[in-house]
Image 1 (cartoon, rainbow, N blue to C red):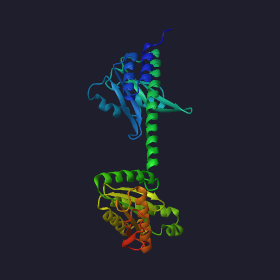
Image 2 (image 1 turned 180 degrees about the vertical axis):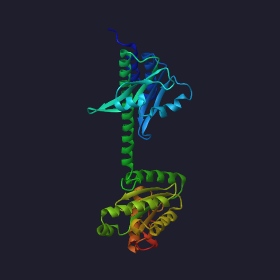
Image 3 (image 1 turned 135 degrees about the vertical axis):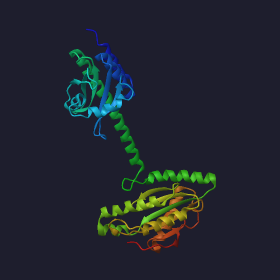
Image 4 (image 1 turned 135 degrees about the horizontal axis):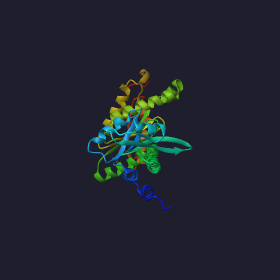
Length: 340
C-alpha cells in the first residue's frame, strides 16, 4: 500500500519549516485538499483572552474571519466542543447548507493530554471515515508544531530570565555589582576619550544592622527596596544605579553634576516617609575621574574612603574623596538629617 501523498506533504512541512505560522498555514492548505473543503481554520487556546483565538484561516472572504472567534465561543459550537471534549465534532456551518467539522488539537506531556485548540473544515457533506482519519492525523501534526513553538518560546524566556539573573540584583531589581563594574569601565573609557569628568557615588543605608536586629531581616529588605526605588527616581537618564552589596548602592554619573545628583539622592531618601511610617537616611562617598583615580578599582576605593569619612561625621552625610589619585581618606562636605 503506497503512502498517502497528502500526509507525506504534511510531515515534510512540519519537519522542514522553522516558522510555525508558515507551517500552520501550509498544513491548513493540505487539509483543504485532504477534506475536499473550501474553508479551514485553526483555533488555539489563548490564556489572556480566556478562550479560543483564531490562529490561521484559509478560504474565508475578507472580513469574514472577524466573526469566527466570537462564533466559536458558544458552548455548543462544534469547534468549542472538539476543543473541550477532545473528540471530532460535526455540525451545521454558520452560513447554512454546509457541514462544519472540527478535530481537537491535543499535546501530551508525561502521560497527560492537554487540549490546546481545534481544526475546523467546511465541506458539502460530513467527511467519510478515511478523510476524518487523515484530518485527525493532520491535527496531531499541528499539535507538534504548536508544542515545538511553545518550547522555543519557553526556552527564550528561560534565557532571558537567566540573563536578568546574571545582570540584576534579585532583591531590588537594580543592576548588580558585576554589571555596574562593566558600565564603570566603559564610562571611564568614554570620559578619557572626551576629556570629561565622571563621578562614582557610593551610598550606605545608615544603621541598617541595628534596624534588622530590632525589626527582622524582612523589614530590612523592605527598607533596601524602598531606598533603591528612591535612588532610581532621583538619578538622571544618563546615570547607572546598582546595588553594590549588603546595604550599599552605587551610582555612576557621567559629567560634572555627580555631586548634585548624589546630594539630591541623600536628601530624597531623608525626606521620604517609607512604609510603616519609617524614616531612613543614607550616607554617601564620592570620587571623581580623573582626579581621584583612573580605573574603576581606584575610584571605588576612593569613594569607599569618602563614605567612611561621611559615616564618621554622622548619618545622612555626604563626603568627597581627597584628590590624591584614588588613595584619599575623604572629607565630610555636607550633613543631612539623622537616621531612623
